[in-house]
Image 1: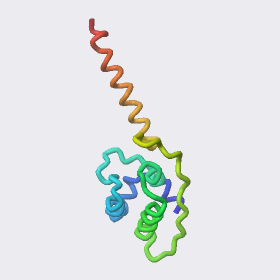
Image 2: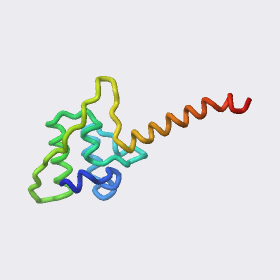
Image 3: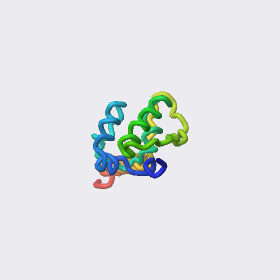
Image 4: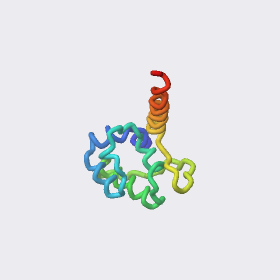
Length: 115
């Protein structure tokens, strides 16, 4: 299962479409995300799921990926919990957000640059 935790979510959904339905059932919107670079293990850190829901989610995903096999689910360690109201991005998304912030700063400088 560790190998699956380190796979990008879009590739996993492409290979196993039922995984997308499972994620949607837990209100995890990976199927509509256009980036898709998050790893499966990031999903449990990013989305506010209880430990029971995380275990249920991963168990259902394991049943799709390894049909008919008994798989022991060992959840990845949780990252630090973000303060209420703050959003915790996965590393790839955090990089995109930071790049977006730099672009916005550059755009704000354009009026001064053209004068």
